[in-house]
Length: 129
Image (cartoon, rainbow, N blue to C red; front, side, top):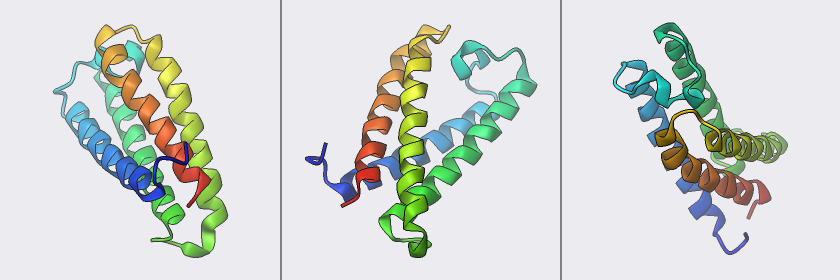
């Protein structure tokens, strides 16, 4: 895992989080079918809206944690950056498993590899330089 350079993993995560944030904006606007997000288990547009907003908040927090781990923000909070990255790694690992069991095949095929890569990159960033 240490073969992946720290900064490569960190910037890759930031780019992935930015893309995911934009995707959630598209979900929020209603351009993505409700059954293609959150494992296909959302019942209506209100749940889709709440899900997108929760996702966007988590992504914003994840960006902050990556920036802390990189020493670009709140450098006095490195323990938060380290343990926060391990939490993000666990979150994406669980998300990968969840995507394998999504009711919508598109979600399984598209997002399983994305969340797996995110979990690996998060683990690399959690390890530090």
